[in-house]
Amino acid sequence: MSLHFQTALLNVLLLWILTAPHEFAHAWLATRLGDDTPRREGRVTLNPLSHVDWLGTAILPFLTSLLGGGFLGWGKPVNTNPSKLKGGLNGLAAVALAGPVSNVILAVILAMAAVLTVHASPAFAQFAAQGVRLSLYLALFNLLPVPPLDGSKLLLAAHIPMKIYVEIARVGFMLLIVAVSMSDLGRWLSEWSYTGAEAIFAVLR
Image 1 (cartoon, rainbow, N blue to C red):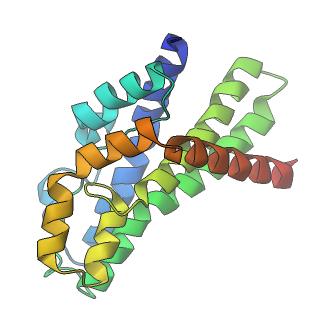
Image 2 (image 1 turned 90 degrees about the vertical axis):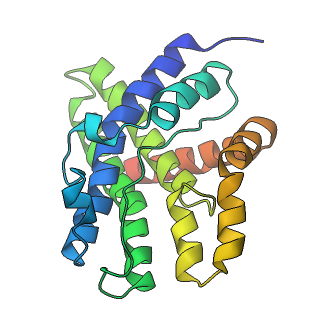
C-alpha cells in the first residue's frame, strides 16, 4: 500500500483555504434571511480558524488522502435556527445550498487564476488548478444527504420525519467513512470533479 504524503498535505491546505468561503456563505445567507445565530457565534467571517472542525478539516482529510482512499473532509457546521429564517425550511435549504454554490464560484475564480499565471508562475497555476478540482469535489461531496453535510439539510426541507433524520445523524460519520473508503463513491466524485474542472478550463481557454 502506497502512502501519499504530499497529496495529503496539499489537500488539507487547500481544504482550509476552501472551507472559509464555504462556511462564510452559509453564515452570510442565514444572516441575510433573518437568523442572527451565525453572527452571534462569530461565523460571518472569512477567518479559516473560525470554521475549522479538527476532525473534518484536518484529521480525516489527511488520513483519507494519505491512504489514497478518496477524500473525506468538511468544515465546522454553521448553526442556524429555521424558526428565524425567512421561508422556514425553504430558507434552510437555501442556506444549505449556499456552501456548494460558493465552491463552484470559487472553482471558476481559481481556474481564472490558473490560466492567467500558467506561464508566469507554473507552480502556482498547478496549485490553483488542483484547487479547482478540490473545490468542485467539495461541492459534490457536501450535497450527499448525510449529516453533517449540507445535503442533509435538504432532507429536512423535504420534510423527512425528524426521527429518521436523527437516526441517520447518529451514524453519519461512519456512513461517510465507509462510503468513501470502501466503495467507489470517492472515485466517482473525483471523476466528476475532474470532468467539471476540464469543462471550466475549456470555456476559459
